[in-house]
Image 1 (tube, rainbow, N blue to C red):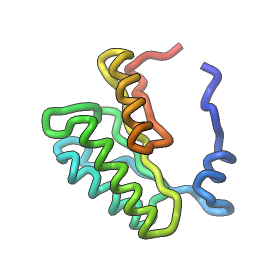
Image 2: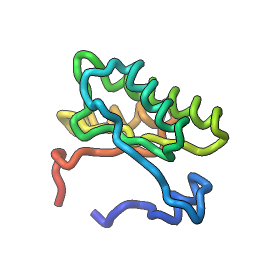
Image 3: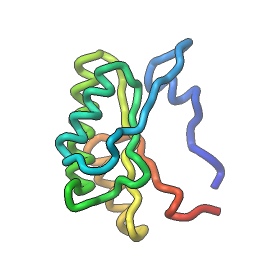
Length: 127
């Protein structure tokens, strides 16, 4: 692994934010929200001033919040917050799955619904 494909300069260019700190957070509570309520938390956090949010590492696909529903509602929240603030906003969607095929499927779906950034939990392994 050579490290991330981009660094802080590219992130600032994407967000069009210079000379100020970038402010991000992890959605809490991390478990128990429906996909719709999770998306609402994303919207409220981003509209409230955060530049980005991220899924907690434990969030993947639970019976009360399946990953497709979460991705779709997160992207709706991101798009609504961007429209409301006039700023570029984002959220790291956790694509971790039981198999690499699951990860590929989730990554492709994240891209289809408009996400430009994803995350993979360390439990997937590293070298």
